[in-house]
Length: 219
Image (cartoon, rainbow, N blue to C red; front, top):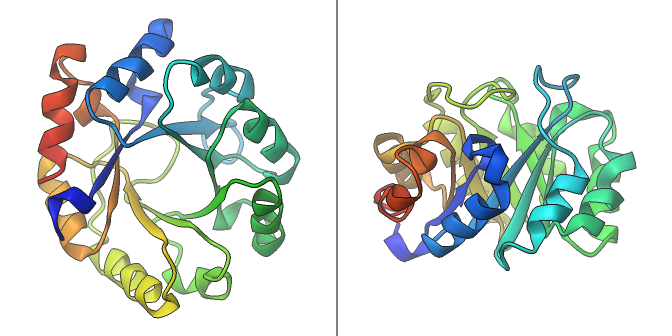
């Protein structure tokens, strides 16, 4: 896949929370395509991060796409809050509730793009019947809830998702999140991913290294 087609979405989970607005501005300047915002509730996943007020506070730091990954359950009651805070894409998990179709309808009803995420054990076939609704598919290559985990090799799953997207004949981002570094990025891109989420591998070594780190992920 050509380098220009690969988008990089740094996860601010690995940023310095004490200067979060500055960090968002820095990764924007360094060449980030999306700003990936991991929202965790301490219930669906074993960690707490931030809510809509923090998203709203950092919205003014960049015009880049806010890619909000909701690792929360239930999802539906909070969709409006994150849209109001400035989300451009809202991604919900297959596993977070019994009514994925309804959740995607609710996201689309707010006028933003809808994503669907799958944990490592969840078969890609579980989203077959919502392919007409999704704008982004997120393949988790770690168990969600913590940053800095090792990559779980799921390139066959990524490839199956790419085939489903091609069959749908729709413009759908294929995103991979978890343990992405310059080495695993190559595997993901070769399997068909076109958006890479990376936290540690972008934010390591401080702001002066962000541009180099982002470039390294593009292959």
